[in-house]
Amino acid sequence: MGRNILVTGATGFIGAVVVDYLKGRGDSVRVLTRPESNPGKALSMQVDILKGRYDDPVSLRKAVEGMDMVFHLAGVTKSVDEKGFYDGNVLPVKNLLETVLQVNPGLKRFLLVSSLAAAGPADNPDPGSREEDDSKPVSVYGESKLEAEKICLSFRDRLPVTIVRPPAVYGPGDRDVLQFIRMLQKGLVLGAGDVKKQRLSLVHVDDLVRGMVMATESPAGRGEIYYITSPKGYSWEELSAAAARELGVKHMLRISLPKSLMQMLGYVAGSISSVTGRSGFLNPDKVSEMVQDYWVCSPRKAEKQLGFTAAVSLEDGMHTTIAWYREKGWL
Ligand SMILES: NC(=O)c1ccc[n+]([C@@H]2O[C@H](COP(=O)([O-])OP(=O)(O)OC[C@H]3O[C@@H](n4cnc5c(N)ncnc54)[C@H](OP(=O)(O)O)[C@@H]3O)[C@@H](O)[C@H]2O)c1
Image (cartoon, rainbow, N blue to C red):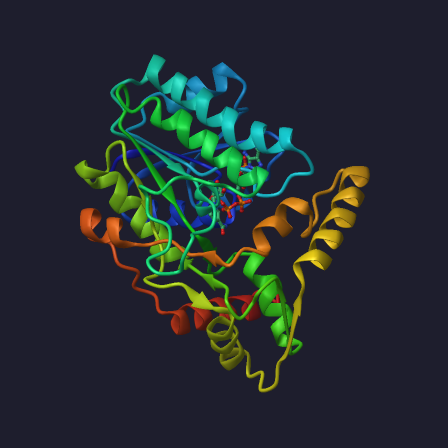
């Protein structure tokens, strides 16, 4: 039977896929979107659109009333300052959960979409980070996501909360992996730090969304954290080879920039951003993430407790993603 589900961040890359998936299953979806946002895409999916702010109790009350579940995806991945991360990643979680407790304490599940960045990089690539490991974020973004997790878990005796931590997410609609693909199309693979050693978990957005829904449906998922991820950490060699095959690129120039140079570039780019007020692709925070060796997490707990396994192979994922970019004229 269809459930009533509030989705935040529905105008974003992952949120749009969540809404499509839930609608496809027959759920009724309400979307909370900020007043300055353009919910054009969400509107076309026949959802109940609610414009509101995360610091406005009236908006939040209207948003959560009558809902069976909340999928909280809204968040800030790029900001020129710490406040931007705090306001976008921490406050909304706190305010939403407090509102749920006041007006809808019978909610069946509150899902927080956090990030591998909240845990920080792994010490080794096999098995990679596990949910029970200590968290050591290396960026302000990661710290803000970890803070949001702590707030969420502080409600676990009163509300059925679940947290998922995706690693890097790719698929149709994503603009971050797009930058890598665009460079590769020109025959360039640009890395930072020890690229030969580095390993990276990845999840296709379709797998992630399926895993998120499985986590909300499992009684075992109550009060738990899960990595929803590919079964292994990929090397840059594997990733670029899979994308190059799809792009028809035969020769690649691989350039890896040393840590110190990246840190300097990040500092310069960050200073420019703080003057212009626009967050760019590079800043000290992003560089601190880019130079790490092992952004790898283990899917074992999700496999064991939820029965989740990633179904989209890297080859198929690259194929559909690049085909989508081409169709939309992004490549
Ligand atoms: N993409 C990834 O690789 C990845 C990896 C790990 C975790 N995540 C997490 O997954 C979630 C969704 O990511 P995404 O890639 O879909 O992001 P996205 O495309 O940037 O979308 C995020 C959405 O959050 C809302 N938002 C933006 N700034 C906000 C602010 N200051 N306050 C409150 N809401 C704000 C916006 O929705 P409205 O404008 O409609 O309000 C926006 O569409 C985020 O929480 C992110 O941290 C993403």
